[in-house]
Length: 478
Image (cartoon, rainbow, N blue to C red; front, top):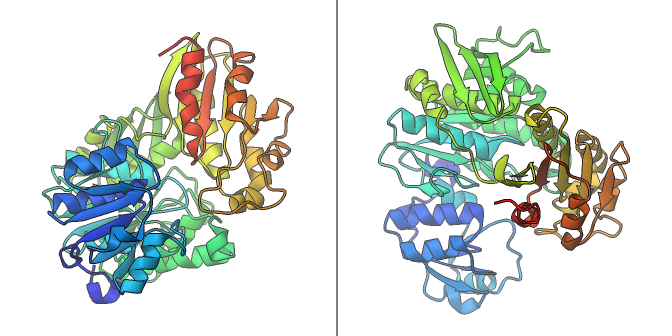
């Protein structure tokens, strides 16, 4: 990545760095890597947490609560799109004329001397980034990485590796992924989302076309999912320009021109599913690679294939990458097993878009015991997304046998009159649905409905995750 092209300042030139909201998934990972590079890091957050404790142990100075005094002895302030303009620290930083950079630019500062793998897409970024990291570790690449989730095997969301590769999620939510010029740019899928920023679905698509072009400008390789119409269109356009493209998917592909536009292909041939384990072969032009994955669902097969294709694009043996994925233990909050009791298994997942929920519940149907039912407890995320996709959410949730919808997790948004979880519950196409605005209502409700052999999933990008252990405990499990 070139500093002039992307407006990125190398991390070593940032001086003393302060993160507003340092405990967040994205911010904490960047802070960890900066600390590993010997950069002075401070930060603030609204509440204490295990993440904050971990950062303090690495040498970060973290305060709880926000005060303008926190930035009096720093050179650079890092903010995310969730930080409001009236934040006391941000206001003081502006008054002092400090360098203020977005989280994405801080991430970019860590990539300036590395071969960058940027994982973009409406869904699947965290899992694909995690799988790519594990695959490259198996290739002895020892990549640095920043993930928007936590690897189950290591308990870490970031690491400063000794190799020359840096793997990171490229967040499209506010367009900031266009700061990067990747060596490998992955596009898992392209759908309408974050319309509060983009306004229209066409604007979302245009941003991903621009991401592909930035990949090409750096001489990089675009790795794109051909099973997704939006990503396939990006791949086809890039290949027609003469860009280096690897397209992957199960097929059959609706567009007959796919594969005939000069792109390399990685075709997935499913071999079988047993419980939560699946195996499949990736057929390249000159070799076939067998993958065994301890994660259910076609979407996970696609994510794993993107990781193997990335290894190939970087010059590593895809067979080594595939072997590494057999030991992939998942990412927290991605079909994460939380425990079981009374013959009922409980899982937790971050899915917060209708397509993600469809894929998740379809996978759950594949792994539930014969005769068992799938129960979902869903917390909508953002008022704008709930309002835009309430029908699609209802349809997706209808895949489950029994549905609980909680109220909206607001995140960075102010309430919108009339927009509650009830408008999603109203769109579920069967009668086994309840809108429960209070978390305290959920466990008693489920205990009356579950039976041995069932699965319960807590789903959403907010704090619904806290219910998983409560449900397990109420079931008498661990």
